[in-house]
Image (cartoon, rainbow, N blue to C red; front, side, top):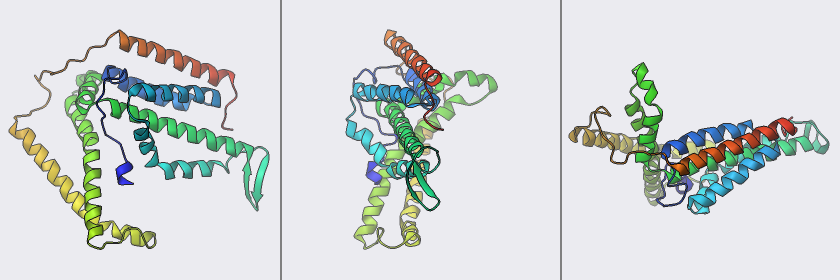
Length: 271
């Protein structure tokens, strides 16, 4: 399960999505996440799902990597879908006492499942196709107006990117600790819920110690290199928006307009 978590991983490439300006990718990611929730019916959501599938193909990242990101939250998707089965009206398909599954419940469950899957896949595209350095530069440029309010934009962007970058490292460390504990005879898969939680204690303590050690080493390395924030620093790669980015924005606005049209002129899926 730990190996299936792909949050924060970056896959180098030269695809169309890789070559887009990182600022454009971040902004469009937030816009599309909002419009995933704006889509209130199957017509609009299917337009968004088709767009996401096209972006996955254009990204050049193997589809199995995206499916890995879904595998990590598979239980959450199933649990949410099952809950939505019982919270809608419509024709009764199955009943047992006070429990009823209706056509509206099935429609809600399918709709919520597509929405969650679309949300996760679209979020994964950003980290898969954008390096941590590009994310830092883009976040800093996007939040630059906040400097007027004396907010330390560079430090915030750096912290966010470092946190995202260290997710794969910590997951790899967790996998190593679990393998070491299993080699010593630790049983982490049998027993009840309480026993499994207790079995995590020998994993969490070394993981916290390792995390604090890595944070200390990183801080020491940055201090030794005279790092003092973004004041007066230059960029090795300067961000430039191109016609390709303008075309991506224009196409995205067209898709958003179609979703708004579908939401207005078609009945909502969730009742």
